[in-house]
Image 1 (cartoon, helix red, strand yellow):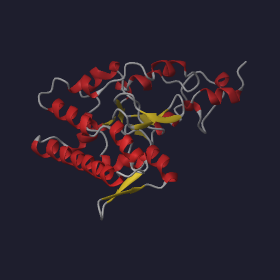
Image 2: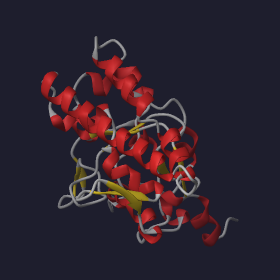
Image 3: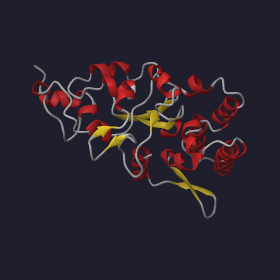
Length: 249
């Protein structure tokens, strides 16, 4: 028989204050613990729901390839190996944007994504099996949108997180000033692309975090640096705050 402590270590999905031993439950108690931890990642099975508008794009966020992300299965932060489209969290909260905290209910229950449908906190085999399988990417939804996909691929190439990581790693060397300048240029390019898509493309700003991911001026903190907005200089970001930046963002 698997001991309770072993079950607690099985996956981070069931490490919460609402844990009840699996032998004592076989159905959802609607405690809301899973929904309060954040929105799900999307998979190809969710494409039709997105394309039909049941889940509007403005409620989605893209974790771009190479961006540090928390892996719920392994319980650690590592670079995303591909796009991960997730449902946004509520403002100033980690809870899924569709979670009704007062009713402890899902606002899109009939159309909830695959991960929500298979997640059982008392039996995590199904969510573990599908977690990394056939994730939905921006290309699946936008590749045939004339002009827009070209802008997104150009942004991804220039604002590559692998490149950013290499620049941050080499900033301790003799080319520190040049490396910092390149990072500054990436941040400016990212900001300019957002303005171009929003203003010239007449696209709602609420869609930008889905189209281009989070602004780099925010995400660079996860790499241990930040931009001083007063001087535009790249500075170290306090190490104890890096993990909290990843979890908060």
